Image (cartoon, rainbow, N blue to C red; front, side):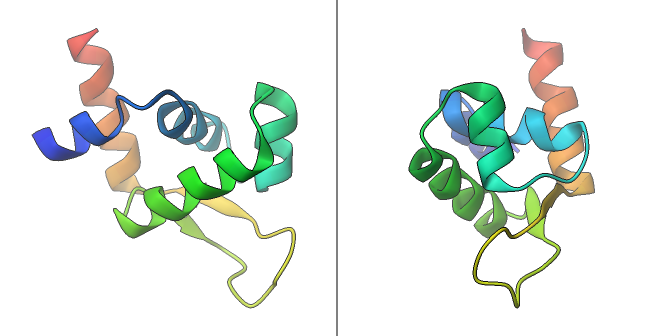
Length: 84
């Protein structure tokens, strides 16, 4: 748990996960609404997926993939907010 909390201290990772909390999104929609570079959001989504905090709903697509937060991702955000 602490490792994941530490992992989410990175600004782009946390912002990306918080964006997914509002509902499924594409990397480009997250980048557009946050002002972050698409490459940074895409990397954050890859890392969040590898850690089981997000999942790709359309893995067979090469572009405009849709991502959503997992239940573990929601739990981690709750814990982060308790610490803030």
